[in-house]
Image (tube, rainbow, N blue to C red; front, side, top):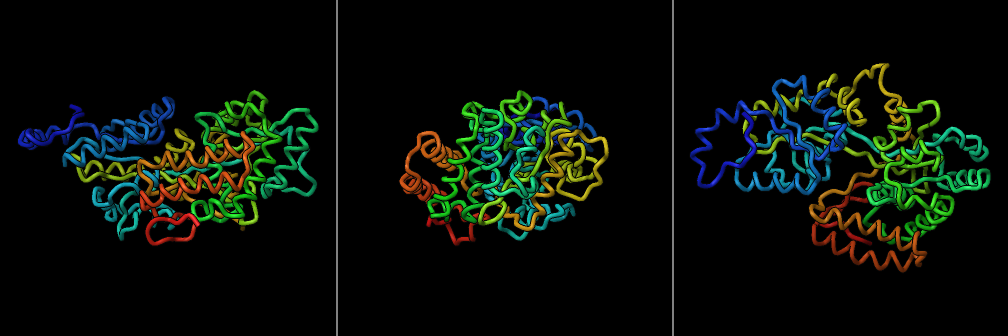
Amino acid sequence: MTVRYTLAGAVSGLAILCSAAIAQADILFWSTQARPVEEAQAMREEVLSGAPEKVDYQPNEDGPWLTRLQAELQANSGSIGTLGALHGNFSALDPENLVDLDDLGVTAKSETFNTLAKLGTEHMQYVPWMQATYIMAANKKALEFLPEGADIDALTYDQLIEWTAKVQDATGEPKFGFPAGPKGLKHRFFQGYLYPSYTNGVVRTFASDGAVTAWEKFRELWTHTNPASTNFSFMQEQLLSGDAWIVFDHTSRLAQAFNERPDDFVAFPAPAGPEGRGFMPVLAGIAIPKTAPDMDASKALVKYMLAPETQIATLRATSFFPVIDVDLPDDLPPAVKAAGAAVAKMSGSADANPGLLPAGLGEKGGEFNRIFVDSFERIVLAGQDIRSVLDDEKVQLKAIMEETGAPCWAPDAPSEGACPVE
């Protein structure tokens, strides 16, 4: 029997009578991750089929995910057994609505991730589950045009611009591809890569002189970018079609190219700027809401998701990488091997400058992202004055930070209260 409704208010007595039935229900895994049909199916068939108890994996967009969770918490009763989401989703929740998971004895290899999972408390409010990031990829045809002395695993933005210019000169076409389409993750590039690399911040430094330089550099890069990039969202498609030879995107959005033609492409770290090699680790976690109907079953599922075999199965299903030490098998898909090597080089580089996903913004997360998208459209596409645009958008950014009270996140320096826009 699967229960899919909230038992509260006038039917509270019935909830008690039905508790035994609820305990026998599938564990509802309510997630914001692995939403594409293929990934969701792989989660059900390849990852969760071996769980201690039967699991109902239901992925949703952030909005519906939060709406149902809030409704169950408000009713103090519900059917969600386990939550899967990004750190930013969890940081917008009241930790008191999540179950402390210290007693499970499962943690990530990274102490930074484990600290984040405490959500500012002294206890694990979620357990790190899987990680991914964004990398660069190129058609091997482009390699002969690398600037003299450039190391593809340690490029600077200036070298990337020079490289794309040389490719354009040789082919007669701009061959840099950027996910600037409606469903592209362009805002993450600005927040996690360009800004940290040039300003060592995101919010505090939004309108700084370093930010002006960053936009100048990106505007220069755009002159060597396929103008159809405003329609590109999954750069694996443009790699395969040849519309782009050098691209940036999320590891999962490059996977198809490497899996279909592994010998034609190379993956490598994002470039570095004056403040280091900015990159954004994407951390997903698993938590248990205080209203979970079967706490023991939910905890058993969390432990199962952190087992080495499950972490590898999750990697195969989602292209998200393990958060624990595992021995990766030799038969992994080519995309996983290529991306894994690039991620390791990027995160392990001496000039690595990791920045987190925006956190603590709640329902204002979309408006926050929009500021970076609008800045891109005004500065790069419309050719407006950089300083004027940043000073204008800065007002809206400041309002969002003050309304949400969200403190600074790395690489911005910590703040007491709302992160200031300096």
